[in-house]
Every structure is written in structure tokens, then in C-alpha cells.
Amino acid sequence: MKYCCECGSSVIKKIPENDTFHRYVCEDCQTIHYQNPRIITGCISTWEDKILLCRRAIEPRYGLWTIPAGFMENDETTQQGAARETLEEAQAEVAELQLFGVFNAPHINQVFVMFRGNMVNDHYGATHESLETKLFTEEMIPWDELSFPVVRECLKLYFADKKNHHYPVHFADVIRNKQNKVTINRYS
Amino acid sequence: MKYCCECGSSVIKKIPENDTFHRYVCEDCQTIHYQNPRIITGCISTWEDKILLCRRAIEPRYGLWTIPAGFMENDETTQQGAARETLEEAQAEVAELQLFGVFNAPHINQVFVMFRGNMVNDHYGATHESLETKLFTEEMIPWDELSFPVVRECLKLYFADKKNHHYPVHFADVIRNKQNKVTINRYS
Image (cartoon, rainbow over all chains, first blue to last red; front, side, top):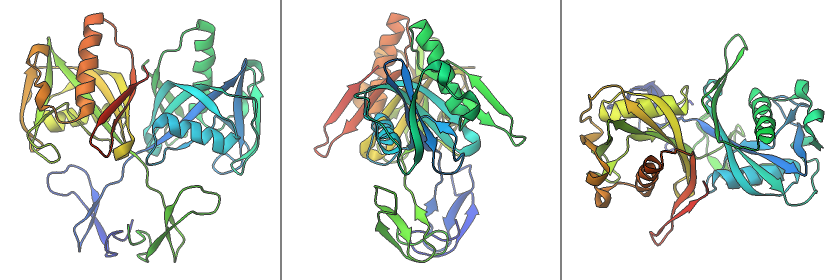
């Protein structure tokens, strides 16, 4: 951030009065520009005994498989966002979404709010965000070609829950450090 | 938003290619400025059989009672943010935070990620954000002087959980419509 989006003047980085964090502050109109984490919301979408995955048509992780998910938008709930992303990325309609888990990713300033939900029919397909979309049984999951650690974690937890016939809400940190090592701290 | 924070030129509102939402886009450098919901994180902080509440020293809802909570910051997890807000607003240190619930507030583009945690000692006090801070038993809660619907909902759910000796992760929408009517849709 170099300029104030309200008045167009230059911003500087400083700690405002009564604050403890450095913020971008406009030198002219004094607007404080807060920057906060963003929510990624997505859905483990099921049809019979299978899960729908998308092969990414966009960077990062072009060509790797992912659970339909993306940035939550204004004016929607997390579950509405998850259903919208599933439609946008995989042409699939999901219903009866249940909260699956919350996953912190502080190294990228994101919080994943993930759901599970049934597809209302077996329609799905490629989109401009997905090279292909496909239903996978547990045995078919391409574990070595998954896009992100949080996707792997969600799928592992989902299949364990399914075996246990018990679906608690999961809560974990999924952190990649500067040496590219992924650490998962599971709390529930 | 009137100006591009990257180059200082004017922005216009339009739907970018391959998008479905109106965004602020810079007419000069073409940067797309996304606007997304923000996370409020807080903690139902307990000491013995009491809960710590803060009387707000800031608008909105100046003078009303609230659970310590605030905007999640970059580079932290939701539970770190909740503990930080409790320290900043009430001078209280909490530990062993457990995920309490996720509450959508789409009418204000916020998602509340709330925790419960024990205070590590009985130190707490007023801050520049809180006129006063106080420990309340259930009977003492000032139900008619609470700041926000989500605060009331969290306290109601917490005391019900406590009676049941069972703490599921709650998930609900807490929505205030244009007629100022609050609707709560509980999912779990």
C-alpha cells in the first residue's frame, strides 16, 4: 500500500494512538487502513461414497487437486460462500452444509472455514478455475497430487470421521514455516 | 474506495474478466481491489463460576457490556487473537482456549470466531477500550445492557452448555435486518 484509497495522498506506516500495531495511515486525511486476515471457505462435497475434487486451472498449484474453496465475499455467510465456490469451481450444487472445521493459516493470513455437504445431483464439470473435476472414493484420492496442506488435512480427517460415524467440528493450525516445513497443531 | 492504493489513480467499479462480482479496479495499473469479510475473535473468559465482561469505552454501543473481542490481526491465529483482545480490553490473561462457536454476521460483513478459556489469575481491569471490567455469575449478567446480539447469543449458549456439562462447537447466523430486527439461525 502506497496511497490512501480515500484521498489519493501518500500513506506512511506508523502505530496510531491507542493502537499496538503498525498501520498504513494517510498523512493528509489521517485515515487508518487496517489489513486483516481473509476467510477461505469451501465444501467437502459428497455423492454416494465419493468426494468431488477439482484440478486447479489457476496458480498457485496449477494442475493439482483441491477441495472446492475460495475467498469468502461480502454479504454472504460462510456456508453460502462454500456452496457458491463449489458451484463456481466445479459446477456442483451442494445442500445441507455442516460445519466441518476451522483451520488457521497465519503464515498466509488466512482462516479456512470448511464444510461438508451432499451434492443434490451428480452434475459437475470443469470451469475456468478447474481443468477437470472428478468424484473419488477414499482409495482413489491422489494423495501425492493435492494442492495444499489444509486440503490433505481435511480429507484425512473426513475419512477418519466417516469410519467413526462421528463428525466433530475440527480446529487446527496448519502452518508452513520459512523452511517450507508444514506443522499441524490439532486442537479438536 | 476512490483511489488505487498501489498507484494513486482513480478506481472504477466493474466486474473483472472471469469474475462474477463488482470490484474496485484501477483504470491505470489494472489492480483489482478485493473487499472481504473480517473476522472478530473473542473469548468467554471464566474465573471460578464467573464470566468476565467489559463495559465499552468506545463506539458503537458505548457504555454497554460485552465479551472481550475484536478484529483478528495478520500473523496470528484466531485463538491468539482472542487471547490478545482479552488482554487489551480487560487486562486479563486467558489460557487453554477452546473453540466455542462460529457466528456469521453478513449484514456487517463479519464472522465471529469465539472461544472459551480460563483466566490464569484474578487480575483484570479497565483499559482505554473498557470503562470497567467485572466478573459476573449467570444471575448477575446484565441481559438488558449487552452490546451486541452475538454477545447475548454466546452467553445464552454458554450457560446452557455449562448446565449440560457439554460444550459442542456452535454455528449460527446472527443477522440484523434493515428494520433492526435480529434473526438467529442456529445450525449446531
